[in-house]
Amino acid sequence: MKKLLLILSIGLLWCDVGLAKKLVKLPKDTSSGFKKVHKSLTGKYYKDYGMQVVDKKDGHPVRAGNKSIRFEVRSGDCGSDPDGWSDCKNDRERHELTVGGKKDLMSKGEYWFSWSVYFPEEHQNLYPLSNNYGQFHQRKGEPVFMFKERKYSYSVVKTIGEDDYEERKLVGKNVMPGKWHDILVHAKWSKKKDGFFKVWINNELKYDYKGPTKTKQYVYYKFGVYRTGISRYLNYKNLDGIEKCFEEKGYTTEEYTTFYKFQGNKYPGHNNSIKLYNKCKDYYQNTDVPTTIVYFDEVRKGKKKEKVGIIK
Image (cartoon, rainbow, N blue to C red; front, side, top):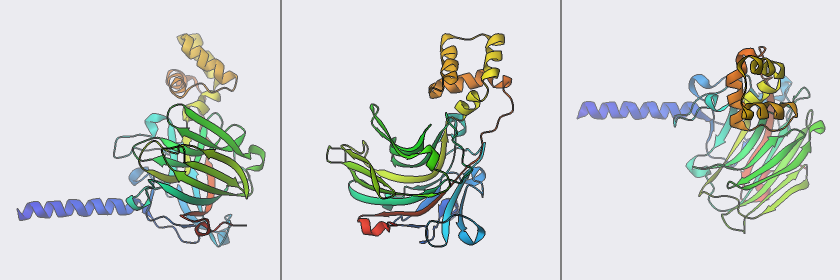
C-alpha cells in the first residue's frame, strides 16, 4: 500500500510539473484580469520564439509602459494536444496563449475586454491562408467570435451555431501595418436574444451585434497567432505544379473545381484544399509559408469598462 501511495504521489507531482511548464505569468504592464494563462503548444512543440514578453529598450514596439507580448509563427509550428487533436494533421500552425482555467471561464453576464495589436511594417497578408489573432472560444464547443485577417482587412467573424456566420471589417489591409490599433469589446454572454457583442477600434464603434453569443455553457479567451489552411497557401503558390500534376495523374471534377477556385482567388474549401495538396505536392517548388509576427499589449479583462484601462 505504501508503494502504491508513493507511485501515486510521484505521478501527481509530475502532473503538477507538466502543468507548471504550460503556465505563463504576464506582467501587469501588458495584461490584467486573467487568473491563469497557458501556452497553446508545450513540450517539444513549443518554441522559445513563439511567445515572448519583450521590452521597448530592445527596440520592440510597445503601446504603453515598457513591455509588450510578441508572437511569432514559422513554417512547421504545429503540434498535438493531450486530447488527440493535431494542428499538423488539420492544416494549422500556431503560437497562442489560452485563458481557459476554471476561474477564467465565463458563463453569463457582461464583460469588457481590451487589447492593442501591432503588425510590423513588413507584415504580409497570406491569403488564402487564414490568420486568426484572437478568439472567444467555447469549452467543449466551437469559437463564437474570432478576430481574423481576411483578404482585405482585419475583421471580426461571428460563428454562433452552424448557420449563423457574419464578417465585419474592422481595419483596412493598407493601414494595418506599422501602427498600434486599440480594440475594445463589450460582451454579454447568453444563449438568448438578450446577448450582445460590441467592438470599438481606436475609439470608433465598428461592430454592434445583438442576439445569442454562445451555444455552450462556458466561453474563454485566446490570443496570439493561429494559422489555418497551410495547404491553401502552398496550393495557391504552385498553380503550375497542379497543372503538371493533372497532366500526369489526371483529375476528378471536384479536384478541377478546387484548382479553378484557386485560379480565381476564391475560397476552395478546407478539406478540398488538403486533398489537392496531398495529391500534387510532389510537383511543387520548395515553398515555405512566410513567418507571421504580431505584438499585443494592454490585454485586459474586467466586469467594468474602467477595469480594462482603455488608452485614449
